[in-house]
Length: 207
Length: 207
Image 1 (cartoon, rainbow over the protein chains, first blue to last red):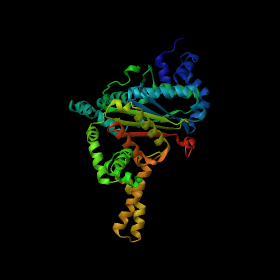
Image 2: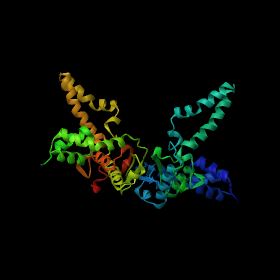
Image 3: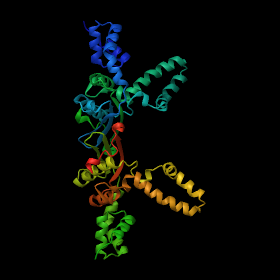
Image 4: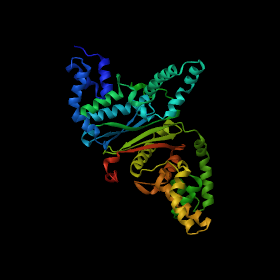
């Protein structure tokens, strides 16, 4: 049987486990969502134990575009140095650094966005809706959608990966966690760009 | 005749021009400080015109230590792309990135240090002196010395270069400005280090 992308996404969101493992579990469960969760739970006990461990190891990775005018530094945490040396990890780290250079997110994750930033981004829209006399619950609903799209614009893990827009960075991260069995985290990043250089899309040549 | 290091340093501080040019001017002026300033002023007119120009070009440079546990990203500004491609500039940029990785300054320059940081660093010392009943002017004098040493600890341009402690980073910058005739600036930097990695001196092997 074919497993729908929606079902895989739902399972991923509910469990935080990588797409590939969700698909495998759903296939094994003949598409039964509850059974798939059980399968993941059984497989996952060992994994979750590892996820609980402190992520004290890791790597600093940099990407500087060939023009020398955009550069990125990323800190990634792992549980062990072993995982930090793995090819999967290093590929992910380099992909993320390149993605940040191209897409220029402002934060790693929604929880890093200060409440004021969202209030500010929504202030004018909220005012317009209020002036139109919309009921409070309609306004909240409309703003909720905008917040989601704000996260997609500004938060690294909510962005579609520049080299493969079908997956989000958080999907890639979840896959990597499953593959390595480690609590891999994107801790922080810095992105510098030469301002006066006048290149609206400094990575156009790379994409 | 031999020109003293003190004279060269004094001339550099008063003019902001690189050590090598100060030495040359003092030699030409037979050690006469005022004459040396005149020589620099004559040579310098063209240079100063360039220094006044906006520094809109530049480069982003990164340094990641071979352990992968310390990384640095630096933004340097130049007037022209030509200077940013020069060997002198790139050598300086890479040296500065490596220096930041090793010495972990907190700011680029004294003007970047928030007043509160200095007040905080001095609070206890000031309190002790006040309790000892020292006169205000003595206290200010003592604190002045501490501020200088704080700058040396925390500000990149006030630090002795790790590969040659006889020169400060600001001396190297002044030399580079003279050599290229451009208003080269260190705009900002980021430095990440894997915290739990337990290396007190992560660059020990490199120095």
